[in-house]
Image (cartoon, rainbow, N blue to C red; front, side):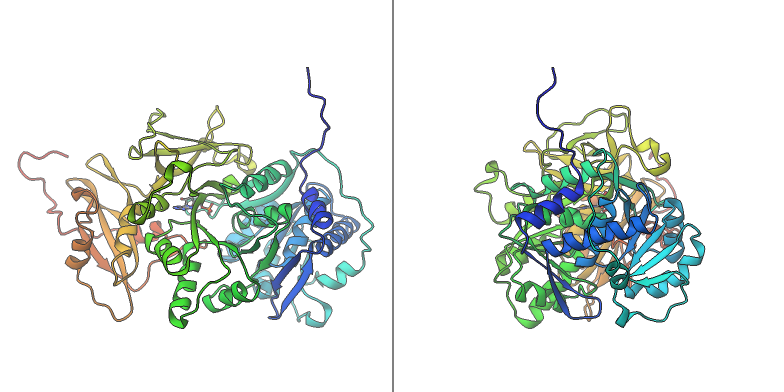
Length: 552
Ligand code: AMP
């Protein structure tokens, strides 16, 4: 027997309809690319998204077409997403931090037909566009007055283009499993892989994200998504924000400490989310200026491990709750969040910081397991680590074009490529990327644990740990350090600081000082480049010869 409830497909434009009706006058504030702060509302965004959908259809775009965006977080970018989805096309976010050749490769792979682009990226697009034959039209997110000279033959100013539609348009109706959005993973190895979100997965993910033990946002919050819409969907905030009717503050192109502080303060932001690098800049700004954060209640930190010192500063110096989160493009992207379960009540001080260093527990809609190399499920004991696998309604079941099939198994589990352990309360902790973990004498050493420890040294600005070939142990850890300006810590000093805080055999065999650690386009340490740089490195512990009686 089937249930007798209504068919109400989970379509993304219903989120915007809801926001436009229930929270019509709630503001969406953006730092525009030209500089000034501009204000709009959900009702206006909805009206403009309808126009955008109507105009796209009039220009000949059809359901299933990929329409790219290369843009910062602004209200215009939001209305572009909803307009594209609402006429059945697929928004495809491009990450401007990738190499131009890589962006062109991704656009060709997706066969993007149109591109919405912020003025900042015009020179980049002028370079890429000739290499993307599928691209028919480039819509510059500006008005006629600010329209620059361009070599692009098919460029038009957004406001002028939009003004030709009157908004008399009905959202298209289709199945909720229809593709809504597309985003390529940053691809630290091999070619980038396309993740294709559906309307259903986006709506369910937005609901999951809002829940009290996930991001826990409501219509009373003022939400500043620093995490870009072009990387992992702004962690769903462009959907969960309108879904619950929160005021949104969109930071545009400026994410330095002073610019973010200005928005946090003047707009009375209560909730924000970004990667640790961004918060490092904000905390530096606060320390230099002596400013406080009177309105901010909660900050979600993820995308890379949140250093303990960052949690300590936010919570103890500024009274802002830190929620450490983990996820990935393939998970829409939220996987786990470190909110406190009742069993954690009473945990204080250093023990609380230990708990918050974990990446958190899964909300409804994310299943997790940790397995060994033979796919045997490992216990949730908070120490046995292995491959982290996930499944759920907002987790990819394949990549676009069928590449990377080996990451998906027959039972629907997706191998995240992360190495982690889970404790008895369900808190997961990432110990490494599978390809970065160091295998020393057959045992695994977590590079992330060592990095977190090293950055706690007062004279260390940034640290990375890589495995270096060792004739006895196969691999041993090398700690690569960028020193703080003016500081001259000795190797022994840093290693001494780490001693006693991890198993002795985990301690790096050597420390190398560098001016800079290479990063990927999405701000992660580029371990491949580091491993190449230190490919011939000879550790002082490596005599090159086995001692008598020793075996590998
Ligand atoms: P992306 O798809 O570019 O967002 O990258 C996802 C990857 O970033 C994950 O598979 C992890 O390796 C890493 N990552 C995300 N959040 C965290 C976190 N809180 N701690 C450690 N690594 C993280």
